[in-house]
Amino acid sequence: VFSCILYYMTGLNSSDISKFVYFSIVLGLSNLVAFSFCQVFASGSRTMQVAIAMFPVMMFFFISFGGFLVKIPTLALYLKSWAPDASFVRWALQGLVINEFKGNDDVFPIPPGLPFTPSEVYEELLKTYGFDGTGKWAAIPILMANFVVFQFINF
Image 1: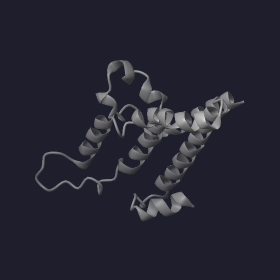
Image 2: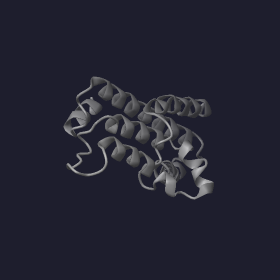
Image 3: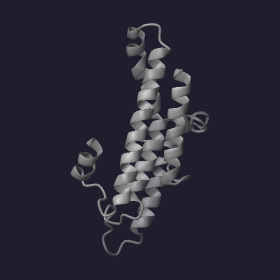
């Protein structure tokens, strides 16, 4: 219900129902992965107070290497090689960005006479955030794998 309201209320690309379905799947999977991570973290902590105190630190790792706060190409080499790949937030954000912007020329209105096209602006956006290596469908199996791994660790 949340994704149905959010998707159309924020004016995301409603021209193709498959974009909404993909949005809902990625949003649901990222919620499951986050919940599984919380379960793993809570079960590995000695007390509830320790889990509550340490959770923001661990979640900051996933958020900061997701590509939104700190763009992936600007990371130091020793972090860039592994940290973004370990962040489930990165994969969810990357899938959603590609889903929304690819082929949507209305998002990047280019005034007449400028020497570039909306697709070139889109490609530059992906490079800026470090999302240019894979397509949107790579996010779903990676999020599923994160969920399975966290559930396995939890048992």
